[in-house]
Image (cartoon, rainbow, N blue to C red; front, side, top):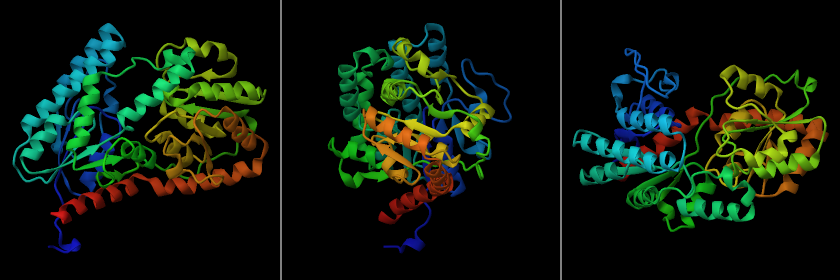
Length: 411
């Protein structure tokens, strides 16, 4: 057997049917000189002047990524987005149509895989079943990039939410998911040699549902650092509490609204930044207790971070709320639920707080502590910046490459 320092670098094929953090993964693999090919849908190549319908082309580009390694297959997504644009977001376009898009993309990638020199295939959960089968037939390792908790775990928690708060069920839209999609993910989980999960919480959700521990690999995402955040103007603002992300009950939005309502503090301002997930009707009784700003431009988001005193993410479940890392990189203390990557990232009482899910009293208590204790806030502000440095994209690349080299060593 070769010694570890004698093992050649692996050669990796990456496949992702959307965007999410896929460009970061591709960049990490390329920087380590192990990316063989990156299969994706719509990509805005520099030498092409193409306008895609219903797509923000500027988001489909990654600075520095070698475009010769990118294999773009835009049609599955183009047709899905055209249909969604014409029909609107509904149960069909968010469930069967999205499932069809992923299956079509996957089948087209699988047909392009051949026996050329590559060692490992990494596929995004829900869109790589056919590719896994093809890669395994070629004798290659297959790794599932599982961005979510286990489907059965998610289903149980959301059913509980609907039973507990039927008034907020409209903010759990298009439920349940397409059964074909769930079956597909379960088959991918079974076929995968290894499964990358974003947090210990996500890892535990898979173990509880029968996935062997030895297949699961903790692989938290990274964050871009932003220098030393400036908070000198913050005292001129009200005590601003920020929720950033998709506004829905999966993210525990009712619990945050109820906490702010019960605190009823005139100098507290709750900002909800993001798209409302479903029918906004459940938010109406709380309209006096929050300000919805929707999507924020890059500059508006920077301004928002500068005036924010605390980020609150009370998710019922969240494999990894990357907004946690973004907040800490900007020196913003966080209050997050235990059903996020909170325990992986947040040091209790040092740079934030981790609270139980569905606990309004705990949310009130932690918000009030930071509101009343400026010294505590300053302490957490400083520590949050330092903690974020442990979760950069460079650190992500180091973890991912070390894992992949370990696969080569096993052979």
